[in-house]
Structures are given as structure tokens and as C-alpha cells.
Length: 182
Length: 233
Image 1 (cartoon, rainbow over the protein chains, first blue to last red):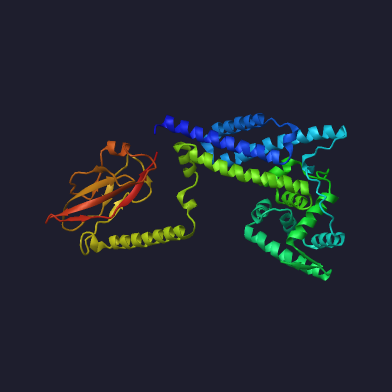
Image 2: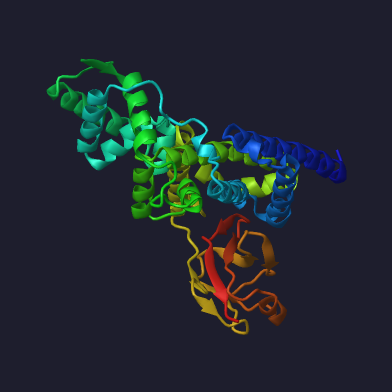
């Protein structure tokens, strides 16, 4: 394959990858409930396309840093969209309508056992800071890998802190008459 | 009363949603959350941000989204790097020396290989250093100058100690990669002064090697060891 053909085919491949990434980002925003605020999906795709291509062209001599550069661009596009939408929400709320997308589910599920909730929250808050941080993030649905990445720890260390914290939590709950079952 | 992880998780999430504002004033801006995910904050700030997210459902959700996006971007960036063409792929490969990419068993194998090679080289060098292997028992040409150090181009004279039974000598000059640079004609004395052009043709501050070969009356050859020198600018 000649250099020209190779470049053409690789640019075609990159074009598809960038489209996939844009689509992923758009679906992510949609899943957060932003679609009802009229995000122009095509605008978003175009914005990401332009910025990634520019980054690729500018940075292609230094591909080592391309990944970090790309992440910054994608984060920045995502955040700009959310900030734009939140701004619009604020304006709408002033008009009496609450459309905060993060309130898509209001969080008030079935009635919670208030005594258990009180004991649990107190017991969690009694743990030392790293154990508290890991267990709470885990309860919020983060994977061990994600918790490790956020804290810049190894997964092994994260596991260790989690299981040690869980042991402490079981003990504290046990003292208050609540038996934790694995 | 009994509980388990699923129930604890549900209760904790309900507590966060019910008792905390979705995005209160104390929440860090999204840009800070993004910097935290991109490892662009100090350790102290990281602890504050992640600690806050552990107690705030809205920030935890935003962090999770940013992590998801980062993971997807990582995947796409890797794909783009792969399809970016031979030039960039080569660049990427050159980015890290091969020894930087070696880990585990391959690294141990390479280290062992280098060690064995070093031992073999040392053994060969020890063998070559024995005078008996060069010129027979007792026969040895001792090089006098230049040996190490740098000298002027104009003063290039090769000197050595004479050898009993030698009929004549030949001097050979090599560059740093042992490529022959110059060879003298037969010399009967114990020194050779090359033509000025030879000295002028040498590169400043580069290492050169020279040696002497003695030809005895019975036509056998005895070679000296190599000596090195360089010339001044």
C-alpha cells in the first residue's frame, strides 16, 4: 500500500473512531436526561470532530501525549455542554420549573428504615477517612479500579482498605445490634 | 436486625439523595472533577474532591461519567494511535527504548544474557591479554607513544620498543570503529612519522587506535596490543 493510500485508509479509520466517540458522548449526555434540553447532537459531534482532528493534526508528531490531549478535549466538551444545560436549567427554575437533569430520579425510593439508616450513616462516619472514602464510593457504585484510579492507589491497596473498612463497619453495626451478612 | 451490602448501598444512596442537595454550593466545579480524573490535582486536593464525592451523589455521578468517558477515550486514542500510520506508529515505538518495555521474564532473560556476554567478553579479553598468544613466549612489542591522551596533529609520531629478531615493522592506524585509516610501509627503526596529510585527516576528539606488527627474519609476524589516542582541535 502506498503512503497516500495508507494515510487515506488510516484517516478513514480515525474518522470512524471519532464518530464512535462522539456518539458515545452524546448517548452519555442523553442517559443523564439532557436530551430533553434540546442538545443538538450534530453540533456536539461537529464540535468534537473539529477539536479532535485539530489535536490530531497538531499533535501527530508527538503521539505519546495524544491520549492525554484527547481526554482533556473530550472532558472539556462534555463539561461545557453540562454547564450550558445547567445554566439553562437555572433560568427555567427561576420561572418555577425544576428541570435539573441530575434530579431525573428524585432519589426518594421506598420508605427507608430510619433507625437502620441513622445507625449505618453514623457507623460509616466513624470509620477513618480512607476507609470511609473507599466504602462510601463502593456503595455509590464505583468499581475497585475506578476508586483506585480516583485516589491514585493500586487496586490491591484499594481492596485492602475496603475489606479492612468493611470489617470495622460490621463490628460497629454489630455493637448496635445490626448483623451484617455477606 | 439484619442487613447486607445491597441494602446498605440502597440506604446510603437514599440518604445522600434525601439529605444532600443535588449540586450544592460546596460542590467542586466540574472542571475540578475532570482535573481529578485526569490526575491533574495535588494529593491534598484529590483527597478533598474524592472525599466530597463519597458524600455527594451528584458529584459521585459526575465523577463516574468522567471516568467512563476517560475509559472510552483511552480506547479510542489507542485505536487512533494504531491506525495513525506507519510514521506515527514508529514514533510511538521509538517513544520508549526497548529496555523500558521489558518486564518480568523477558527482562530477566535479557539481564542474564547481558551478564553471560559480559563474562565471555571478559574471558576473551583476558586470553588476548596474555603475551604468549601474541608473538609467542616472551616476544612482545611495547608501544611507547601515543598511548592514551590527546596530541597535536603535527606531532603525530608512533614509537615503540624494538624487538630482538625483528627484521622490520609495520604500523597500522584504525578509527573508532576499527576501520583501517592508514598503514605505514616497512620501517626498520623504532618509530614512524606519518605524512602531514594523515594527521590532518584525523577528526578532532575522536578516538583512534594503532598497533605495530614486527616481521622477523624467519618471516613470522608478531603483533603488539592496540593503543588509543585522540588529536586536539
